[in-house]
Length: 271
Image 1: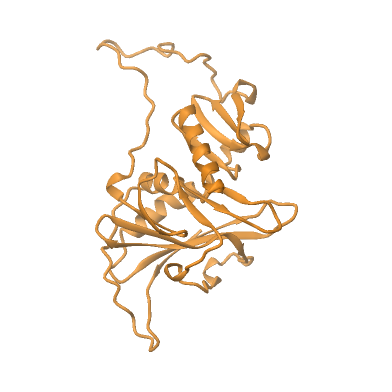
Image 2: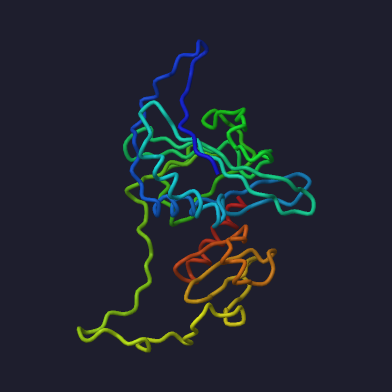
């Protein structure tokens, strides 16, 4: 992962004034929720069409806090360039793939997220992401080979192009916190109060998960949480979930929300 405070220069090498509405104040949790609401679809001539979340759960965990901090440091004549790199896990195509773009606020309440690469091949074999050169300015890409699709819960207010979304930070959803039902005032509850269906002392095994297939995904209820996982990634594995190794994963507040996210993703591919 790499973040750059990017400036623009004219043909004479002079820095160009951009006049952006910076800095941008977003919490790391809202950054994570905004980015987790972005999916994409890509049509390919030879290989199967591709679709899924823009960022994996592991990438979101790595980028959310540093990105939120970097947005608070931007000047009006800068924008934030981001890059994530992962290993492609495929028998046909191997190597590293990168996702990159820029973030800037053209006006108060309008945070622009524009991509120039989305899981495209890159090479940072020496470990230095700063050696990567970005041939295209994301805002000048007119016909990208992919299309962003915002899920219903994402606070996207506009989509000027296929690779460009505008987010309203004030509409960013608050974190969903699951709490036990409120009870009348009294002594603190004992460890056995309001027990779940089972009360394991450690993470429950995979056999305790409730799963069912749905439109090419596996919907999972596990340890009080709800997930949608691409069926192509095999049976549900708690260890794989813990390590953030699922490439296509939705985590939502209910089974209904998982199904809505799957439907939205499939509808975007059909369109």
